[in-house]
Image (cartoon, rainbow, N blue to C red; front, side):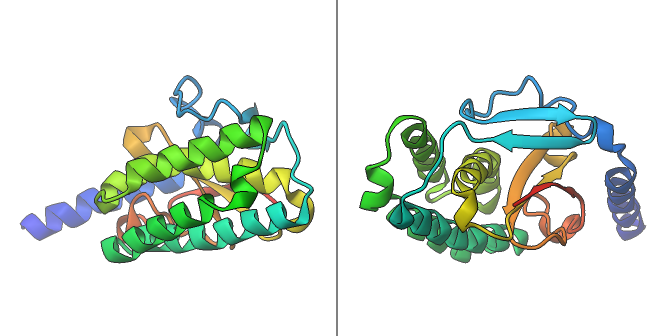
Length: 199
């Protein structure tokens, strides 16, 4: 009987995620300060667009952003799989990539975004899978801003959103495929979410 109740509760969450109206996806998130003040997100109905207020045009910096994105995908996939060991390794690798001269030499708004990514990674370091998930939204928005700033050198970056993350506050992540694999709930609600913007 207990198993039936748990299965029914999970099914109710899944249905709620699938039936949540698109226009409500941003509710509860609009006034939430995730530290990503460098990101201007405009809500146009059911679409959210991230604007980078700087550009990254130096080839070596673009390549470093791409390398960071590649390792970020390892972190995101580890969170989808609830794999603490793999997520720990990815966080360590991301911190190493962030300490590269190409990131350290960035100035102005780009430097502020790099600093925010570093802060998120420091907060994730050594944390449980759930602890890392708490910082993923901020890291993801910062990364997507960097990817947009380096737009000419980046392909297959999709900003995705789960309206149910963090008690319906909602949260974002970045993926290289449009298929939803939710890092906030893992296998509990693997397909909960939608693509909000693509590069």
